[in-house]
Image 1 (cartoon, protein in one colour):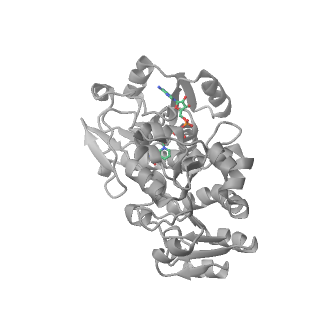
Image 2: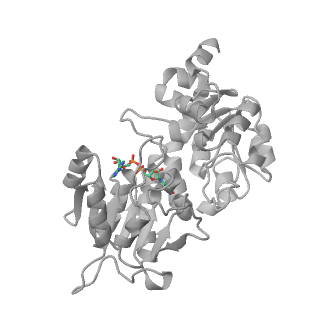
Length: 373
Ligand SMILES: NC(=O)c1ccc[n+]([C@@H]2O[C@H](COP(=O)([O-])OP(=O)(O)OC[C@H]3O[C@@H](n4cnc5c(N)ncnc54)[C@H](O)[C@@H]3O)[C@@H](O)[C@H]2O)c1
């Protein structure tokens, strides 16, 4: 198979869909890899490393889209990319179709196989190609929160770890899933006092067992949230109700309970945010003020630490790219239901029910397409 890797074109996106070692492994498997010149620069992987791995470097993205059987990317195809997708081409990347009707109909019209990282499942009920980015965002949320607590950025001027004779900062984490757990490890490691709220008691039980002594768990209800808002220097929003908009846990009037110049990092902003006052921001302009509270609501946090994020992402995507290259998506989907869940569009036919429902489009059954193939 000929596998192509273009440079990401979405604003502020510095990750790349494949590292040089990925090209090396695929070439050893007997495939050909072509990458666009400069695709790895934002993550610290120069063209020479791809060449040494056996890949061919080409100047233009158009050559990748023209020649590749499978295109491996990070972000959803942008309009100029959609226009270049070929009939029957395999595109392996994040799509998040439910949020974008034009992207969905565009990929259907181009007749491609849209294989979405975010819907590939595992035996534990998880989304293994999404988890590493939640881990990155969780850890980064504390790093960013600590920075914006600094006075020159508008924060309270609190050092999360404290110093001898001065109490540490207080970190409140709403949601104890992947993001919340990684945030708690980071904040606890810095020496902060941490409280995690969740509505899943089983989850709280597990967190209680695994977390250090400076992390406490509390059942999440409006009273607990109000009480802890008044206590916190930094609040991290990390809730998720799968396939739904984030629940609104903190209203604008609740901000009045918070200490002046405390900081909110609403990681759940990609699902609408769990603060009423959250609106998506960018790395170039990440924060804004509402009623004296600093808000950080960057929707693609992992892009800020592109090298770590690229490595974390490609660690989990490469094994699947190899399987797709070896078997093709039809045979792989027929053998592996978790992979089948990743196929959102099969040769131009929409086969993901929630996406179809979100846009009022009709949905085909992947099984029937595979049987007829
Ligand atoms: N901004 C970014 O760059 C970025 C990056 C990665 C992930 N995210 C987002 O972060 C959010 C969290 O992701 P995750 O992987 O940790 O999800 P997760 O499913 O692992 O965890 C979510 C947790 O929220 C809890 N929860 C649900 N409703 C709650 C409520 N009312 N009160 C308290 N807790 C509640 C759940 O019980 C669960 O433990 C998602 O919206 C995800 O899309 C954002």
